[in-house]
Image (cartoon, rainbow, N blue to C red; front, side, top):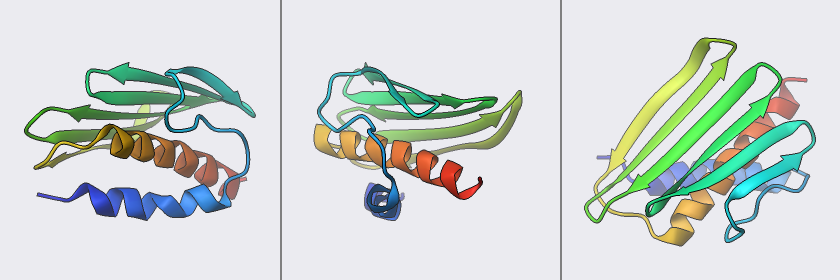
Length: 118
């Protein structure tokens, strides 16, 4: 099984290159506006999910944590077409800080990708 560390480490580069005011780890779940992105973070059991919308594009990530493992689901959709639909299962539970970090890194990577495509 994959380890979550490469996922978190692989997305950290986005944190350094994105400007704006994303939801910070540890902030309460809810909706935040950053530019024309609509971002909603929801606590889900021991994990969280995030939904991001901008125009006709949508991104979704859910981190579901159980005492035995962690499941991460990522999706990207344009109109009604899924561009990305992937999941991974990790053989250990993530801590709350690791969940927050993975969600924040996902938000930052979406923003970064969007800026590069302009």
